[in-house]
Image 1: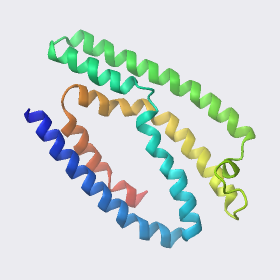
Image 2: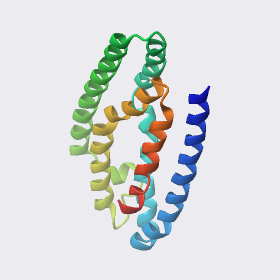
Image 3: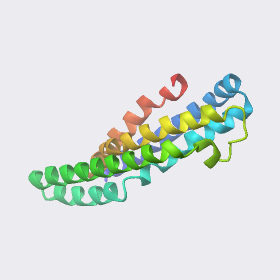
Length: 171
């Protein structure tokens, strides 16, 4: 119960800080890019909302199975579960990276995103390619949060999120 309360409280705090920092970043980014380019930036950056779903359910399955193994104090099974999930996500990421890079050779992402007629379309295409590669490479790293959740240490994951949230203003 204590872990649930702690995770809930830290999660609410994390969300509040994240919202405030995002709202603070909007005027800075809009002033720097202009409204049209900010719209393109927001569109590409908004694709990051798909990251939690990119693990194809492996993360959610890991949370459940790891929680059960942890409840039984079965450290060997816990390690095995984490290794299998990590290996699976690395394999999926590698395959997706090959497909994405092959598609990027022929696809103009600015056109796909409906921004092909904008003067900054080449930058949108490049930014989307960079974002796509980073997104795919980051997929296995999302397991860190899921591992902490499975170990009933959600509050630790939330604290890390609070520590990294200011990077929104720097990046």
